[in-house]
Length: 243
Image (cartoon, rainbow, N blue to C red; front, top):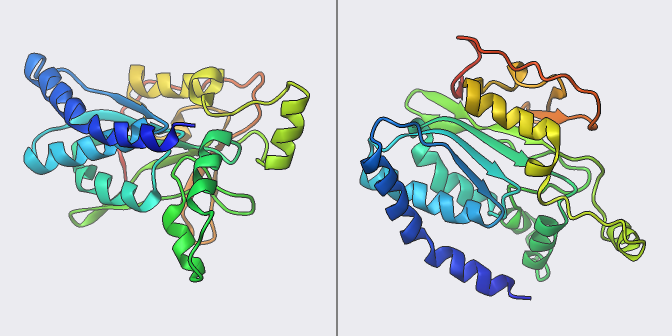
């Protein structure tokens, strides 16, 4: 298992991504730049984004996606929140059934502190445990708050026992690539990228709004099936959520 080595390689890739995004902006200055970051790539992109906007406050991106992110939640806030005003929208795809990110979170909690609150520091943006809610964030932008849209992709709740059983039966799914394997989620991303409709209520009929115990709003994808895409091109419901 080369996981720790992969994390080092990810951090060493930040400079290259910063240079690449600057090159794209210089080459096509009027183009909309959309970014889809996946898994440990969310760690690379979050650091690159932070560096870009701190060095150039005018560096703007269009729609940004963090899918199945293997990134600490506190680092996500620290690195991404300074860029909240530099993005048209932010969508976070997370799941309670992502085996890869669940395993990453488990590794980070093998030797927890006696202070149970310390365990929260090691939670990932792409996974949430049984009997908890998906991560919901709010970034301060001047006198308002920018709300990244949290989308719950969970199909069935994760357990290592259940995964091991399905693995033995050759039916195991990692659930780590749902954002590009499930048609409703692909349609949801397409709605944002092709039509600029970023508000979940206007994006897909399979999305249902719910809230956590603190009143934080997130959206849940129902089971795959004959769901109807309700994306529509409109002047309302676009842009980044604020309050």
